[in-house]
Length: 119
Length: 298
Image (cartoon, rainbow over all chains, first blue to last red; front, side):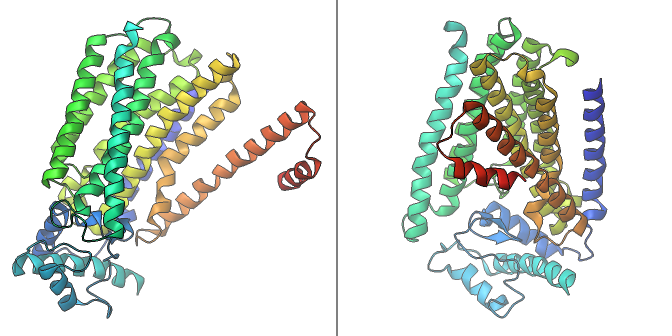
């Protein structure tokens, strides 16, 4: 019976901790705009995370893009150029200018969450 | 032999996944070295998910085959339903075919490690349910007298369902529209899902050890259960160390750090067991190395 007790105790702790992670543990004040939502969808259906990381999650073929639009190393113009033309390692995905803008809106949203919280 | 045919089919399927995974992995690594190699026809964006999906499938398809092979021996009765196992095999083979074909044609969910479209997950849930039914109906575990490896297998089966559902919470706007929540929960689900597979592997390893040593009490010892609960705690709470750079609440990182440290208990136990076995063997060939280990223990 002790074993069952330990199992239920652990399951209870796991459920409580999960609820906390889903709510207070991951709250964020920055709102995702409609353009950013569209950009996120494009990011996912084109499997961008296969090569790029956001906050360290993703592949290593390309650079981490968490701060790409918000730092001097990148910026919105540079990112748009890469999205519309591809690069040495990156294939040309033939995004339209609107699609490129939506992806930039998403990456800007991601970058802002990092900057705002770490300030 | 005939009664184990389905188990061997799973193992053969697992090895086929391994061979294909190596092939696609090699292609992806060539693309890493030579970025223009198949860049427009079949880019890294396609080869990587195929490689990862097949590598993951090789592990848990083989473990499934091993569990199907040995559960009749453990339970002392024949498999509950061979027909159900055959349906499971067909459904799993079909899922692998659909997911890999989808990746080749460019259908993605864009989620790390689970890059197939979300509806493919429902097929996985169905065949895992068939596996769980067959397993539980064959074993019919009695909790008071059940050895630790059956606890391990049952835990792996249950947590695969929990984590698979959790990995799809992004389909809800509440999770999808907050990148901090989305990434943290994604790491949480993926990390614990690996823990669920590990539970299946630990159970298999523990069963194999019991068979090799012939010590039937091994699966019932307090120390075996202590390590099972330690493994379960790690499955539930250890995922957070992947999220050190995600700006979630610092408590997530602190919990993960504390739980990660419990793995030192495993290391200490390995050293302790090794020291005892060395003493028993009476081997005095390496006294200096032995003294170093003794000092490390202290």
